[in-house]
Image (tube, rainbow, N blue to C red; front, side, top):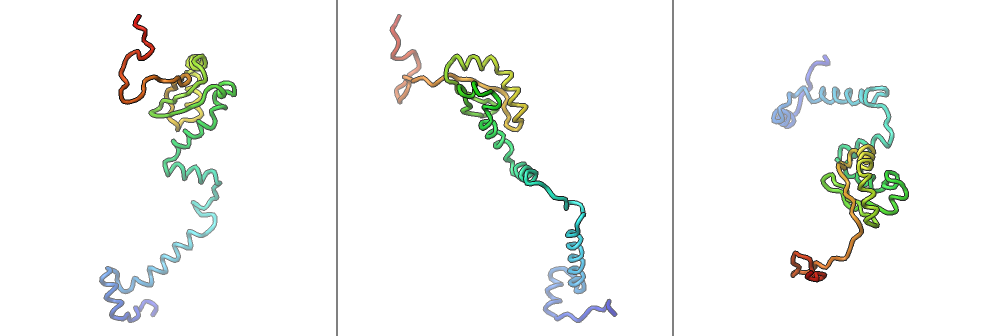
Length: 164
């Protein structure tokens, strides 16, 4: 008579009834759950193959949405490999927003030469770092001192105006 239901104390029966469980389901559910858990621990089952650390980290960064930021960091760190050693000595990226990469150059001559090579540089960046989202590159020359500062700066030619 293994199918007989043993006598359950009244408090346990009330609890099971309030939870919406039949009195006989208590032990059977535990047994079924234990068997299902044991099946998951068997070797050679689907989903049990080993993964490399690189694959696990790639999945983690993708799930967390870090791919874009990491691609931008890689772009800055590998700038010399993309443009070459000589160019990297005279130009370095300073900003990347809305698909526009701003590159600061040592001189206006370097900025102009790199501007002429813009298509090739953008192609290399898009090929190597597709998640960075680089669409265009802007090359700027060195920072020059500005005479326009302070609360009373007005548009116009400024203090160097000789009036003709």
